[in-house]
Length: 96
Image (cartoon, rainbow, N blue to C red):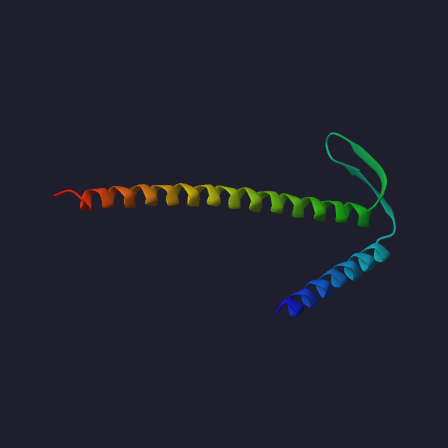
């Protein structure tokens, strides 16, 4: 199963590289970009596309990481509360 996953991952990466190369070949002319705080002139469209793609990917990773941290924190809190409740239940069972 691990080999199949690796093969699929590598083939996906090769596909991305081929698509990026095709996009770069079909759009060779430079463009001007104005991002509000800076203006970039004569930038390749393929580089801009790749930069936007990578920044979106990084934003997604950060968002998912924050969500995982939050759920992990909640899980630890719930586990602590469960241990407290179990301890309290054991002490109540010992009462006459």
